[in-house]
Image (cartoon, rainbow, N blue to C red; front, side, top):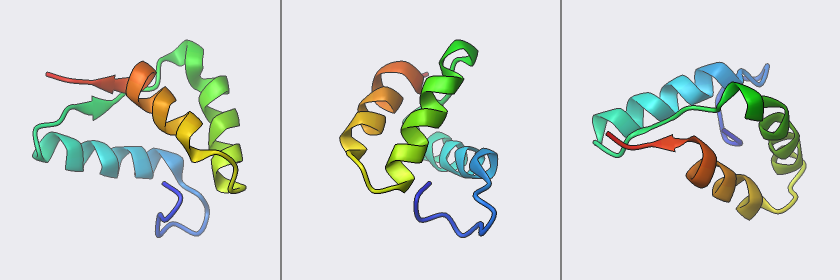
Length: 68
């Protein structure tokens, strides 16, 4: 998401693109649970500001990654 081509920071489009890629390669998809959205947004801001990217990676892996 950090290197997205969208100047306006379109997070939904980034997630859609990531999910398209992940589904196409058979590795699942990302679903941010509704009750975790505020936490995700906070981590995303920190990520954009160059702070610890390991935190958001772990969050996405543990809370949002769905395999099928």
